[in-house]
Image 1 (tube, rainbow, N blue to C red):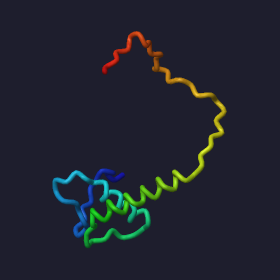
Image 2: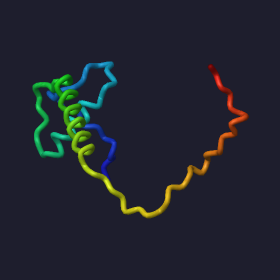
Image 3: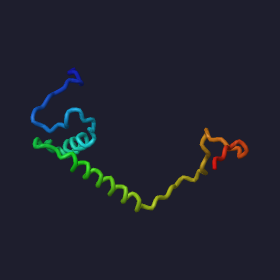
Length: 96
């Protein structure tokens, strides 16, 4: 069995700036290209454009989610959190 951690170096594909730790846009773009069965472009990825695109997709997702009426079939009553305690008003400190 081949070593699953062998690294294959490929020349001519876009890379981020050395020292930059912002991998998010690159990982998302590569995953999108590969999941669609497309060749990753060699001419560079515009990171600013990728950020705007993914922000717009998240915004659209949030808007669509907010428009859906949610209902639950759960009939169980809400239970208090197991680590919550009832507060004693006499022991609270009030700051004015």
